Image 1: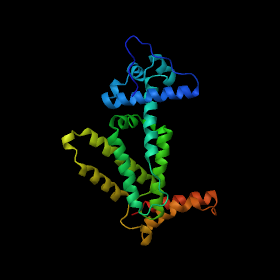
Image 2 (image 1 turned 30 degrees about the vertical axis):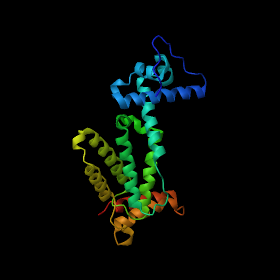
Image 3 (image 1 turned 90 degrees about the vertical axis):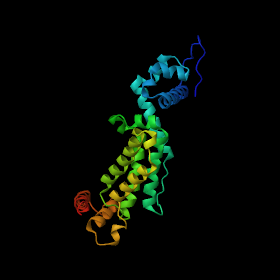
Image 4 (image 1 turned 180 degrees about the horizontal axis):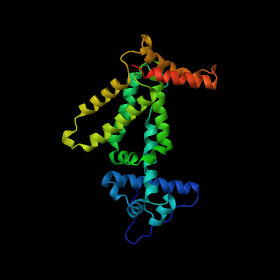
Length: 246
């Protein structure tokens, strides 16, 4: 954590140049996250962050535009940190265990960084975050592998939404509880409810389930190029309709 400047000391301006600006931005972001986690969002003022980072307040405006720009940068840093922690196995031995592991990782990150996590998901416009989009693509890849194996009970996009929202809801619910009411069983039940909601106990392609077979075929369709664009569009529409039938 950056040291607080001594009384009467005027902090130095950020170094000039791209590298110097990036170092200054990182310093400010780290100071803001420290304040956020220790004292809450209201404590993250431009003046307080500047003091914690050892800078003059105008430097914050030059680097981030305003307080909202600073908070957006802090949230993006959180998404990037979470993305870096994700493990991608292109061919998991057990795709259901892989799903559980990914869900657990998301929840554990939220519980370990409660104030940062809440900030990350507090504004709808942050769905445009490049790191968040990259993380969602990893989730879509995981769901796609489940679909190819015939494991999905629902269509891929719905599965992505259920998995993501259940992890988000689990974290926010846990954080809303007083410490004496935080039962770890809650997280296990929520995770298993998610697994049951989006997956079959056995791969659907091993039985006569029309919807399961359609979902598996829909997942592999983009790999085939023998169809024209119009044919592929029409077949995709049919498979989407069949995959939603019970």
